[in-house]
Image: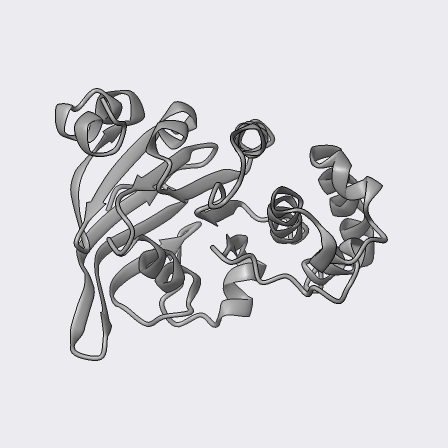
Length: 237
């Protein structure tokens, strides 16, 4: 693994029982970088994110901000600056927007939490408008914004997003991805798992293509987008 990367994963093997879902994967995310992992459903993308977050065990090496995180609990990874927005958002539907957001700041001081809340409301003005509304009554796009906002409340250094465009209208997807670009400008790195390869490659700096638990291609987002196999399989060209 090279020096200077924010997140480094080397030779990751992840299994469900005797079935190996991810085999020998190595990846890096640098500071102020957007990296995307694209691939078909079932390729192992979500499994990899869950392992990095500590939800699943894996064999291999993983460091974050220079610290070995293999033995860290999920809460300690969050405290170190690593955060995950899961595919299904996992909001508390019976709680209002602001209470959901505040749950994301339980590990930081009240003063910092207040700053984080204002930052989230600046990124997502619609959440501020609906701060007293129950999370379960929000639209799909608003729920995705809330899930991202809750993750950002802990002031992460790296935000991992699992299929943020899933089930959303194109205009909402454009808003979400525009916000992802703004996060990089504010100093937050992003690891983006996405089936919408075209949208992901447009905003990413680098990309990995995952098939059947392995990376089959990696490089700059521009180069990956220009690969004939990627264009045919994922971009519809």
